[in-house]
Image (cartoon, rainbow, N blue to C red; front, top):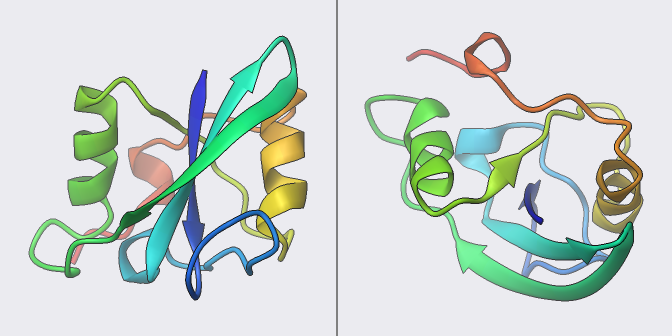
Length: 99
């Protein structure tokens, strides 16, 4: 399973989770196997244009990357562990901005 976490700064597990999916600097993409984080990569976020947060969400969906929703925990690594444990809901249209 791959999980995309909106991230501030350069990306990675030690960075700050972004509070806005469409305005983050990048996405930390975490690979999870058997509940364990096995790899990470960083993908730059395209500019926040028309379509709001749905634009990157659709791109990740097309690439087979699951996007989960979490807006309270500030650390990317902690969010990744929560997703790996299966405690986060999948991000849906109701979680995205629409501007």
